[in-house]
Length: 498
Image (cartoon, rainbow, N blue to C red):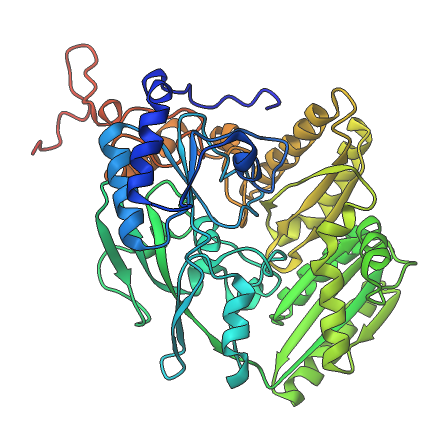
């Protein structure tokens, strides 16, 4: 796995594999347990196929009660558990463990309740992101977060990674659109947090759970808010002679007080790849392309389009085209959403990175990434959520060429370190997983990481849920809670002890 170090498998668990599988079959009968090598192959990785590992067994529960019993059994027997949705994660968050149960939630695929009066939908975690919008579209509603993988990714996985999408600039990420969850703890206890109400008193536990990457519990039900479709929505294509000019336009639009429904950017390589793949009607003579969507009342949208055009023209925009029909608007976005698969036509392998920077740093970061591309001798296409500075550089490589994967990984690490350097963060929506795990100390010091681990300890004292992810070094909870004595003196002796 390209030098990736995962927790050493527990010899006693591996030795009891046959017994463990038999006992899991008693909990999840029928075809609920997969244990042969050939049948487990589809589960050996998520969207980051550079990292692969077969699990001890794959368990596919169909009820919350089964999830509860599997987790309680794993807890009692010291067996790690890795929750998995559709496997579209791009950070290695669902990478299995040799001594661990891979808990697949694909059978939890029903919408349980649609409440238009409260603008809420209750869904099981295996329902696809786009499936929620399809279920409410007949009444003119939709679910706002829309990752590029929305046709396949599940709402449970979205909760785990705090996924975003092209419309997250105006309407927020998953954490801004989830109202409540039902979750099973490693002990088997079933808890409910939040609900159809907009906010809860006390600690923001829901905010803690969304984006926790399967480290705290297994989500078995999600309540999301749905929105009424805007009266009018139009997308504008703006082509620029350089990525720096397009980046400057992004900052200028936001500075002018215009908040688009979505604002995406693609460089020349990605424009050509997407156009060849889908034929969205993109201009091919530009170095960078912005897709800006304005929504709201028709008069407001028309005014905002004029304002965006004025800003773009003032910054050297070469081509400008606004959608004139819903079909054309959808086509503009279809090209953007197809950007990732489009790269598969021009490169045998690629890494899709995910870092977030302040908008004002876009021109600088894009220039530095061009220099890195030359340094490593690898092509890098840029397609990203420009409005909120969430970058998705696609580093092209060939895994069959010795050393290229390692070069791609080093290139990606340099990009993420650059994001932190300019005041950004390591991830925007893909999560940390294993891909960014060892870079966490570049953003957090030892005290920060220890506090984050203490939160995990509160939910999972034996570190059985998704170990080896997020934290570069996983301490035992007893170590984190130990009182450190130096020179015979306690730290902060003036503080009262309870």
